[in-house]
Length: 176
Image (cartoon, rainbow, N blue to C red):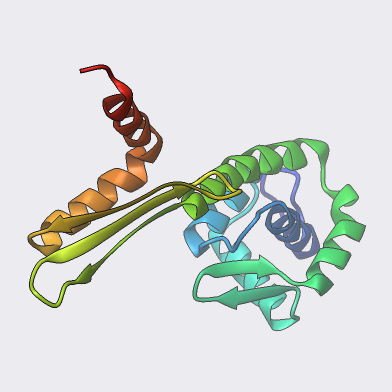
């Protein structure tokens, strides 16, 4: 990391930045998500430096790795909070903006569910639901003929749940 332009100069700076980012996320971050946010936060950060620092944070139990991604542990939360003021202001601002965008995407993902199951008499049942964080807004089951159709319905619902909900309400409330 030495000799590159940017504000993150040491392994410790980079570890603090990773903890800073993870502390601002409501759920685990996938490898790609965490990599993108970290590398975009400062031009001096290299992929291999990031990889080594993240592995070290996992090894020292500051960060936990699971099937769903990376989360900060209590140890990481306490140590990161203590050290985050050492991060340069411009890096913190960029990291906060990127983490806020990911956080919003994670919140939306957690409120929209789509999946399917095989029916005993043939076909598939597609389950679609959307929550507002308090309770369900819509909970819908559809019969489909094959898994290709079911997967397409799920994909479209995940991308457009709010718009589809609005259209369903509009159709159900319009005067005939």
